[in-house]
Structures are given as structure tokens and as C-alpha cells.
Length: 455
Image 1 (tube, one colour):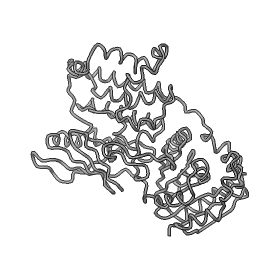
Image 2 (image 1 turned 90 degrees about the vertical axis):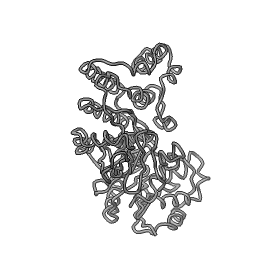
Image 3 (image 1 turned 180 degrees about the horizontal axis):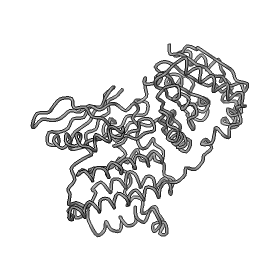
Image 4 (image 1 turned 180 degrees about the vertical axis):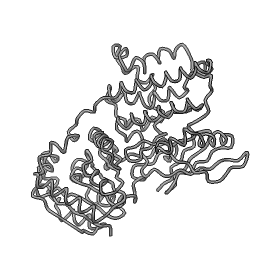
């Protein structure tokens, strides 16, 4: 897997290795870093699993850098692959940590989703160098603007303007209020949340500068009280942007499904359960997971699951379900046919979806998704089989849906003649180049379930 690196923080740099993350802290920041790691806040948060654990590799000598090792989060993900609920959870975690820090004499010097990774459905703060000592007389949180740009404005743009979170891939530091102001109408600018998040900052920016604001000082008790008020205000804004997710064509797939009779659905579920029992995977990739029914089944067997689906509302429901009934599932808004690219300097700051996935899964599940790739995305079968093999270390569980199937015909939309040559024999031959069939069953609706093993 390519190396992911981070070097923008003046206090140090980070490199992601196969089994761990390595962080180098520059000599002038070592003392404060060690003090924070030894603090009650850091110990409490680490014990709760909300702050990444840190191992000191060797005691640094005065004037030398410090090397830390962190456990690797199994599958790194980024804000442009999250649902709105996941971004809200990451924002909540950031505010929770900052509240605890300011009471102990520390503060976050930056506030961005890049500081957060998800371990299953649970957000974890992973950048220990984002913590610095707080000036007790400074009433301002200097990371306030970044929190608004990277958390609140993307959520507001999604909720009110329909801008997908995936668009933040090209915006490392989020949206600027000045970018959104011209997009809003005169009435909209004066309504919540735009009035406080966009309109007032734009108007005030013409009268003051950030440099002036950062020189503000107040008596220590007053400064602490103002900071607390600031964080509560941000949380209220966050709550104001939170609302019950809507529905899409796929977010209620399980309830509305008509192409599986009750007997077929039971047989499919039983086959998946038997496949999981036989394969006994530790890590599962569920491609086209929809709302995560089979992802949760895989997690119940003891596997750690990463679940991809291109429908954000279906993925949102999958994430909320595994939060309500905890399961080791990480749902992501991800499209196998259009995978997230690498980004950042030299394409190494954030890794591509495929680079994070190759060879990391004992079992890949592709249930009722292959015909979508063939028809909607027009990916040749051989290409799908080859890339699937790159994801799978051991096993593949795949569902074949043929041209006579009603959903196949619905997707082909009168272009049946284009796909007339597709058949189970071709499916078996293409995937047979990389996998050995182990079990097969045909449902009453003629859909075929196959468990295969890597050659």
C-alpha cells in the first residue's frame, strides 16, 4: 500500500505504515506533547477510546525530536466519504475534546475533520499535535473559523443547497463564507443558519482583521467563560443543522423489496450466514451494502466490516443503525465504479479508496450489485472480476443477476439487446480466472449466489 504522510503541522510530521502510524515531534514541541500525553484529559480520553493511544518509542534527549507510535485504525476514511451524521459526530467529538481541554489549561489549535478517523461507527481523535497550551487570558478560540469552514458550512451547504459532502475533496480547509455569500439570495442570507455562519462574518470581515482579534486579552476567569460560551454556541449551530435524514430510492430498499419472496430472502440470508461460517473472515468489504443488512450479519459473525454504497441516504441509515445497535461496521459513501482518488500534495496526504483496500479483506461481498456495475456503469465483467480479486485476500461472495431478471431489465431500460450476451457461463468464466467456486445456490427468482475462494 502506498505511504500516507502528513507534514503541514509545524510541530511535527506523520507517516502511516502497514501496521502502525509513526509521528515525529520536533524538539521545541516535545515538552508540551509529553505533558499533554501525561495529563488526566489525555489518559481519560485514551481509556475511553476517543483519543488515539500513543506509545513513546524512546525517551528523547534534550534538544532532540520525539517519536510516537499509534495503533493503526483499520480503514482510514475521509470527510468526503462520510454521511452528514458522521460529520456531525466528528464535530461533536471535536467540541467535547475542546471543552475538556480548556478546563485543564489546554486548547485545540486546529479543528478539522482531518483530525478524526472512524473505528467502525465510532469517531476517534487521532492528531495529538493539535493540542497546545492555552493562553489563560485569551477569550478566543483561534480554530473557531476552521471549525465553521470544515464542519458547519459543509453541513449547511448540504442541507440547504444540496451540495454533497464529496465536493469537499478539493477543499482542504472547507468553504469560506465569502464563497457562499453570492450563492444565497437576499432573504436567505438573513435566515438561519446563513445569517450567523456566512452573512455576519462577511460583513464583519470588512471592518476587522484576524490579527486584531488574536491580540484580544481578558482576565483569566472571563476568558474561560467566553470560551465556554463560544463552544456552546457552536454546538447549538451544529444541532440546528442536524435533522432526520430523508429517503431515497435505496434507503428503504429492504422494506420495499418486491423481487425477493419471503422464502427467497430467507434462503439468501441463510446462504450468506453459511458462507460467513465457512470463510470465518476477520475483515469484510461489503460492496453495494445499501442500508447494511448483510454488513451487520457479517459483523455478528465476528468480522470487522467496511460497507460501501454510493447512495448517501442509504449509507446514513446504515450508520445510524450500527450506532443504535452497536456493530463493528464502518459505512462509507463510496462507489466501486468511481472510487475516491488520492489527494493532497503529491497525492500522498490522503490515499485513494482502492489503495486503502487492496489486499486488506478476507472476504468481499457483492450482493445484488454486479448487474449495476455491468449496466449502469458499463464496466466489462473481466475488469470487475480482476479488481475484485485485488480487494480479496481469501473469499468472494457474489450474486449473479441475469438479463431475464426484472431489475436487470429495469436498469437496461429497453436496451436489452446490448446485454444479450451476458449469461451465467460468462460470469463463471470471468470470475473463474481468479476464484474457485466453492458453493452455489439458485433462488426461486433465478438469482444465483456463489461463494468462491481465491486461487
